[in-house]
Length: 123
Ligand SMILES: [Cu+2]
Image (cartoon, rainbow, N blue to C red; front, side, top):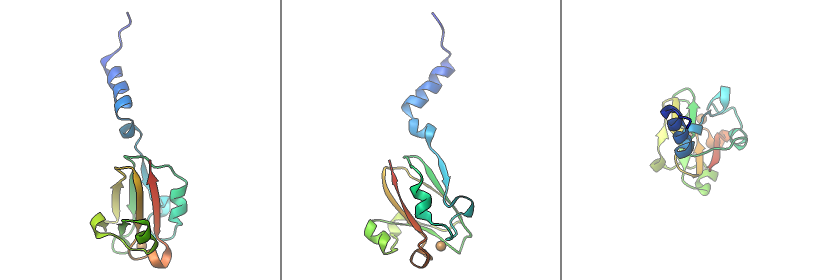
């Protein structure tokens, strides 16, 4: 009988048990242009399929922007962020999409004046 190495079995087990860990991706919001308000962020998001475990990286000059979230579509439409969901200001913020659902991201400074916002649905 053929022997299968323990290492191979462990690798296979990880793929079977933790597919989201194995497949999780990191996305730079706005790609090369970052989170600087010059991109159609909704168009950027609409071209992608996000999964639980993926991470969004927001790169921007600290002090010029922030990263906040709305708690509902109504808030999002009004560019209202929810303090309960946190506000990020480091200039290099990594936010994990760790549960399925809809996320609403915005910049408190430029949401209303420059549409610096986007929503994503995580499968
Ligand atoms: Cu901004």
